[in-house]
Image (cartoon, rainbow, N blue to C red):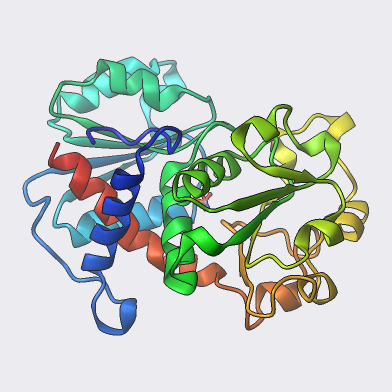
Amino acid sequence: LKHLLTTEGLPQRIIENILDTAASFVSVGERDVKKVPLLRGKSVFNLFFENSTRTRTTFEIAAKRLSADVLNLNINASSTSKGESLLDTIANLSAMQADMFVVRHASSGAPYLIAQHVAPHVSVINAGDGRHAHPTQGLLDMYTIRHFKKDFTKLRVAVVGDVLHSRVARSDIHALTTLGVPEVRVIGPRTLLPNGLEQLGVHVFHDMDEGLKGVDVIMMLRLQNERMQGALLPSAQEYFKNYGLTPERLALAAPDAIVMHPGPMNRGVEIDSTVADGAQSVILSQVTFGIAVRMAVMSICASH
Ligand code: CP
């Protein structure tokens, strides 16, 4: 694996290798991550053209735990604001001996464009492009599910909410189906579900209570107001009434169901605080596991 751009079409053996490699970085208490010299002497450039809290920070921690030199380009203070093109920016950073670019961009496909123009030894990792893909989020979500549920082949998983605008949902659905989850349900209003979901092998529900019955994993999605035009934008109250995860709705799932959310959360819009902070929530574990999973992705890509 040289670049990680999407989970779509990523073979099961590669996904499992990433999850196993991530597990090998985790030691005491299944949470602490060891520092290792795998990327010593390599330079990792974090290029976040869109804001981020979790992804940018955990990539930086992960690169440092791999002993890489990490550079975070401040996009707002860069010459992008003077009109320098994306590819000219990449060419100039490549001239500073970059070995890996971690890229988040509002335009779907931007990391692909970069991957086509870098030198053969340079890797590109997609940290979220438009509404297209967020593969390391998908992989850390798979790590989290495997940690808590062990066997993918016996699970019912519900992905709930604004799938239309969600790169996380796409990456999760591809990974879940590749790993053999027999029942992936997608729950949301018609206006926030893309056409053709059934072709991905998922079951579509518009009634949240129906869709949650008996599921083992609930993956909530953020209502992405910034990607909507007026007509699509439901009111927060209306959305919460129909698609908010409340304790009453959570009780419809399996008694040991886990609740996930990629963050950032809109509390009181897609999820009730009682559930977000409750005993079945693994939302902060997802963040922690992101460090080991991103270490795994970077070390595997660097050894291509
Ligand atoms: N889950 C996620 O991508 O969060 P950030 O936008 O904070 O990176």
